[in-house]
Length: 318
Image 1 (cartoon, helix red, strand yellow):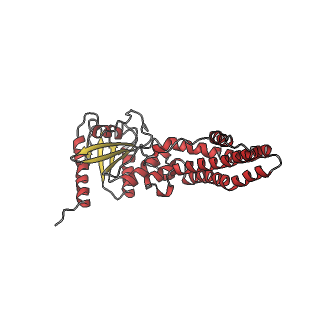
Image 2 (tube, one colour; image 1 turned 30 degrees about the vertical axis):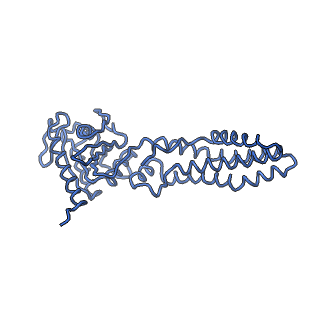
Image 3 (tube, helix red, strand yellow; image 1 turned 135 degrees about the vertical axis):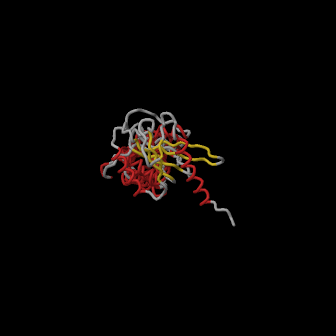
């Protein structure tokens, strides 16, 4: 999604200032003063309508967003809240288009066009100021959307697990991503995307924020972003455990999270135990992102699923 192309959403005062300047330039072209006052009102209402319509059209249709991005919008702001603000902008645009011509006509027909012009402009200004909070909300939303990573339609490994188990360390070792690495939990506040070329194909890795084993209603927006990435983007899920428990969470809780994720996805789930230089855990792939031991074996397992998926999507003709 190319959210970075959404332009800055102006405030009510910024919209009105620009519209007034445009209307004033048209007003100066009229030699008849009464006509000039009428033209100022007409040009102002038209400019307001066009500017508000452009604000609405700069945002993608919510119903047409891919499921992952739609879920992120819902998690961060709420779909209904976004619809409400876009609807308010649409209402103001329609008001300007519907009432503008009548206000312009009344300005010309009035006994005192300059005074009526001021009244008409005040009414238009009042309508725009009524949606100022919505315009500011949409601009804040735009500023966040622009920073969302672009997720391509290609083989994707989503990396999940408790905080501080080594997810970001792994993705830094195997992909182009350069996430922040720290020894405290919840370093990753949103998803991070990295890529790796495998032969002539690209492999996409997505590092997700740490997840805890707790009821869905108790999960915060950061955890909910991780879940929607797991559910909507993964061709394979790589769950990383920390059997050493240096992450600060018991291995029993981490195993319970494994079982939860198993119920959520229909794609392959690969489990790798990190920090094998501290504790080796039988029954799973073991690795150490600290010294690199076992990382290649985990990567080879993921590549196996990539090859298998490629064969399923591109069967050789008999």
